[in-house]
Image (cartoon, rainbow, N blue to C red; front, side):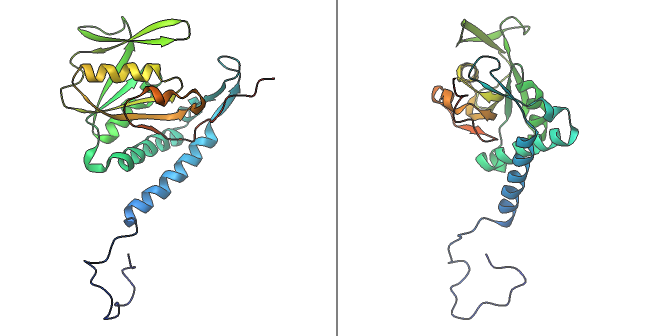
Length: 221
């Protein structure tokens, strides 16, 4: 798209209404640049702990982000930009579903920023009133997630958020709950991904990750 200050096009140039649009709108390009800058800043803020919580895992600690007001603001802005990039500003989710427990750290703030509601997914027995339940496998056996039955209305567009996707079991259980309540699951959004655990293969909705993924675990000696 020509700059607005450029001279008039020559007379043999095709009409602007007929020319294909090959560049992103300026606002989109600006948003992409801002998102890249935010992602770099957030990535630098993470702390890494090898062999935690078990051997072979490089633990990415996101808590420094929440200890700094500017980084916290940057995280919410980056997530907002990612949502708008993936779904469009006119198709934002109606509900953000956050997984216990770290999805609670940023899920409500993101929901507020997007003009959406927030619904928590909690471990069994933590929510009052009528609930819906879904099981998922953990390394030591089964665990259970629950949502309040009136948390999501039929047809609402729902985005599930959490800090990290590892094996994908808990996120899959949350997706099952959303569908049991009649919600339309538009995707999952994570800050980080342990790509080598292939957790996204368990999910039947689009998966989006804010920061670059870990492609492999720590080398075993």
